[in-house]
Length: 370
Image (cartoon, rainbow, N blue to C red):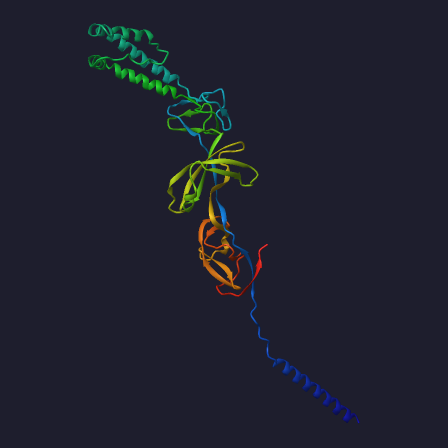
C-alpha cells in the first residue's frame, strides 16, 4: 500500500514540475513589445522683437584723479612740521607737507648773492662813463637789492653794447647762479598742491633725505577715476561723456560716473580697450573695487536670449511643424549670461531652455514658457 502512495506522490511532483517548466518556457518565448519613440518635451517662447538696451558691464579699481608721488630734489634732515607727515593726515592747498633743513644751503646762497652784489657795484664807475644814460636804472637796481629777499631781475638792457659790457664781467653768470640756488632753496619746503590727504609716508622727522628719494604719496580724495576693460567689439556702442552706473561688489551703494577717456589702443592678448570713468561721491576710496554698467545704446528690432541657446555662436533652434530646426541669427552683443540677436521673425517659437542632444528634425512637443 505504501509503495502505491509513494508512486502517486512522485507522479504528482513530476507533473507539477513539467507544468511549471512549460509555463516558464512559454513566458520566456513571448515577444517583447515594440517601443515607440516618444516626442521630446521642450520649453519654447514666442519671438517678439523690439528695442533692446545694450548694457556693457565691467569692473575695476578706483584711482585718485589728482595724485602725486612726493620725491626730494635736495638733501637735508627732515624738520618737524606743524602737521605730522603720516598717512591719513589731511592738508589744505598751500600747507607745508615737508620741511627739509636748509640752513647750510641758505648760507651758501647768501654768500653767492653777496658776490653778485659786489660784482654789480664794482662795475658801476666804469658803467657810468660808458653808459651815462643807463646809469640811473642800475643805481635804482642796487638800491632795491635786498640780500635777504629774492634777487630782483636785471633792468631792461637796451643795446648790444650794454649786454656785451655786462657779459664780459660775468655779471649774467653770477646772476643766474644765484637764481638757480634760490630755486633749489625753495625745494626744501614742499607744499600741498591741492586739498588732499596723505596716503603713504616713507620718512619721519629727523630722517636724512637724499635727492631722488621717494617721501610719500598725496591724493585728492574727492575725485576718482575707474579704469575698466571693454571688449573691442563693444566700442561701437561707446562714446565720451556717456553716463555710467557704478556700484560696490555687494550692490549696497551706488554712484554715477561719466566716461572721460577711451584708449585708442587694443590690448593684443585680451582684445579689450581701456575705458576711464570719472566718479565723485561719498564712500569712495583709493583702490576700492567697483562694478560699472554702461547703458551704451538701444538696438532696434532685436531680442535678448540666453547664451546657452546658441549653437556655433550664430544659430538657434526653433520649432516648426513639431520638429526642431536650426536657423541663422546675427549676434550683436554678448553679456555675461545673455546675448542680443537679430534675424528672428516675430511669432517664431524658439527654445527657451537648452535640450540635451538636440538636432535638426527632432520630434518635439512644446510647452510654452511661463
